[in-house]
Amino acid sequence: SLNFMHAADRHFDDRSKLKNRTHPELEKNNKCFTFGHDKSLVKAFENASKRVNKTIRKDAVRCIEFVLTYSPEAEGTFNKNDWVKKNYEWLIAQFGSENIAKMRIEYDEKTPHIHAFVFPITKDGRLSATDYINGKKALSRLQTSYSKSMEEFGLERGNNYQENPGRCTRK
Image (cartoon, one colour):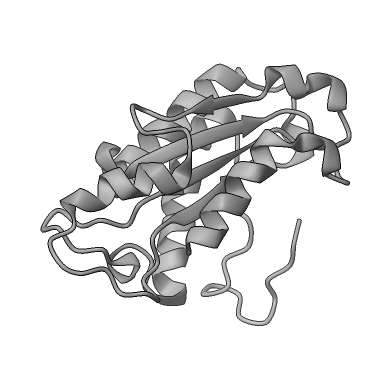
């Protein structure tokens, strides 16, 4: 929703109100990449939506947020710039460069992580989150694809619910 996009922008722009910042001194290292889109997600969507060839429904998913991260134990075992670049490459492979609205890298919380915002616009001009993330199996495939692309950094996929129903735990 548009409200979600406004809230996401505020989360990055006003870090002082966050409760889980363990490293506020590292805020200066946080980075935001917009890839030619407007810094505001709402304005970026307004521009990207020109590629949509149908009227956009009120309840349509306009933006998908992904949080890309690793376990705190992996901190310091690989080059973060290489990791960020590989995350961007994975997003492009999955969603197309034209749909990557913004990537925010946050270093001031417990574990550095990326918030990636993707517009679910298909090649044939439809706004369709379903084409990208339709159900548990599709999400599981995305997680598996992501983990395979991160193997060079020594990162492994967490428990897969499909392989271990009822035994999926957080690491």
